[in-house]
Length: 479
Image (cartoon, rainbow, N blue to C red; front, side, top):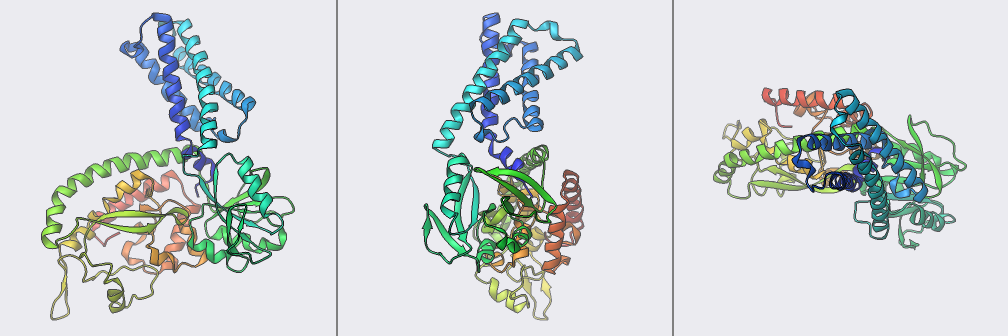
């Protein structure tokens, strides 16, 4: 769902921070040149205009995308892009000052000096930082998997390395016309062949796939898209696929058709991540308060750690540690298979039992009646979910998304099940508010998740969050 535009914005946070630093350095420099003082923020009027410059710069970055493709730009294009951005900043702030009739407060010398200094600084910093990143990539790079032939494999790898400016990490490749598994081509391992490539991609952490083969292999394109993968199809000699979400982009020197289940704009991605950060911060504060109340209760009823950490599978197969307040006995994971078999849930795609004997304080009475305990209270009110707000802040999860599967569930997935992991998993989601524990058919869960991915909007997230609060207070089962 998060197309390259949104991913690119999230990965350019370093450029955004540097741009804002350049803006304020230029602001202080211009003030010193005009007024001889080193602290413009002490003056109320200049504090206000500093805030206006900052907010305007951020809005221009979000809605005009001056950082889109920043690592691919040469000196001339970088000069032009930075100049246009500076002019837009000047025009927007000037329009604001004219509208509020407050322009006469500020010196023209200060204004022009500040804009000139900002242009020179931000251009120099962008060029310098790109040199640093190209030599020493310090950010998370997109994990790219290649579908190639034995004839073009080496050239494809070389092209991406030489012309993608460190944007991609090549995790492996499948050579489709020969079985070359176990070999390496230009340092990239051949990890799959034509027969097992779909099975391989179901299990591994892969963000995007580049298809660099001819039309004799186009039968697999739709299967990859159905997995929720972002698929780049090299256009030379290929017919367009039927997927509705399509954009034309470049990887290395190749023009590619990029297909995916859904997409978001840069502005939407910004708002969603901002919601996650705000919500995650509030949630972490509430988690701290809950800890004071729940920690002694959990420990007294079941000595052991207060928090439960488990490896889950996140977006595109990336594994992460998810945190919860512990609501089960310490050996719950070891007893999972035993309980699943006893409840008739052995082999199910999702394990969820309303009368789980591993829950703290619960027990089965001699007459077969299930008696709830403090652990059931924690789960019924979804209090165990609160530590996941830390995962939201880290970026492993979102407030709203799809349920992150356990590793053993992930290993049972069929190809079309993988589509639900094309977005960041969430604390809540569409299927949780559509019936929560009442929905036991995994295929129905997958269909609801697919609806969420294809029909995503900020308004849909807001509705799901509001419904989640309503469902929790109805206490109709744990999420």
